[in-house]
Image 1 (spheres, rainbow over the protein chains, first blue to last red):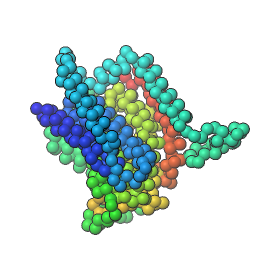
Image 2 (image 1 turned 90 degrees about the vertical axis):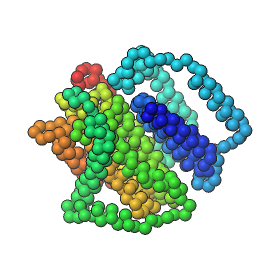
Image 3 (image 1 turned 30 degrees about the vertical axis):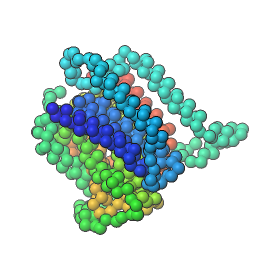
Image 4 (image 1 turned 45 degrees about the vertical axis):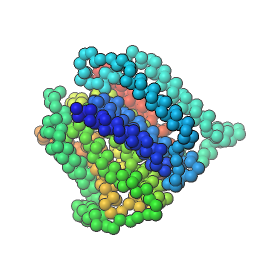
Length: 187
Length: 314
């Protein structure tokens, strides 16, 4: 009963905060409204006793939103962000897409044949979750992890406009790299 | 474990447990302030000065800036202290944590991540340039220590085979984790100082930007933020004791006194080291973080993983 109330309340809160993203007129407020929505979703997971998933959701989404706030405000045409802005573009199209996705998801959630729990709850659900995800697939997970990491590095390398010739000179014989930010290590 | 009830909320009832843990959190914060004052100004006035300052802030008239984002600013000022208190929920008090789950360490880390959001908002709220620069400095600095901190926390969980704080304490009955995880211990304490932008990591509130994130704070809000920083440092010292120094384990004295003794000792070490190192520039520290701390903490995790495989902690 208490769980039901908590889930419903937090669910309404999550939707309301999500809607607020498109109502407020500053980038900072939009970002943190979205964070509030994610935290409400994490709270729902917590109410369902999925502690690890809940806490990890809160952790990841917070870091993500903070990084997003920084980059969004940095790259905005109006970096002040406090001046009126809006997250809404192409209103008619987005309403159609939003309503469509909502309909599909709701239909799916209510019509799917969810499995019943067989067996008892484990004492340590976090450990069981880890073993289920990682157990038989450790090699796959490791390969995926390295592939993702390689993607991040390649993305950074492609995005940076300074190469080794800028840093060490045309003959690559500079003793110290010529960087705009000196850095903290003696090189 | 001999004591099966690991949650104080389950053992003492929710309300008494919450009150006790909140009071302990405030006491730890006060203790840190006193230790810090003693290190900086000596014993004279170490007790009185913080009380006088708190009283002054309570009655101080609030300063306002043109066109602030009031909602987010107020929210952030309260959040720093609230988050510091919430991270206390997974720190053992008298052998039990307020909230004992299978993901305590992740909870602690999540509260720290929310601190990022709170401090950046603190800088954003007043619509003032120095304040905003401070907020961005805090984030830039965070990019340097967040990963090493995560590896440090994971290392403790790895050695114990559980993410439950009381489980981590129980796993150190034979040998304190600091012996096999010295790098994780140091990184954990340094990151705690960085999250409270204190000592060498105080650049977000630096004098060169007129106080940065706290520059426009006044009155009760300033008191809340300063209290939050102190409580977070106190809580982190207690957490360091639980994760790396065997919690309340020790001969003769009862558990709680050993825990308190070790916590004060950690605070002394933190203050003695932190007050000697000059403020680090975030742009320099980022390079140290990624070139030195990330590899060091990764090697630390690898060593512990190998020790786990060899049955060292069993």
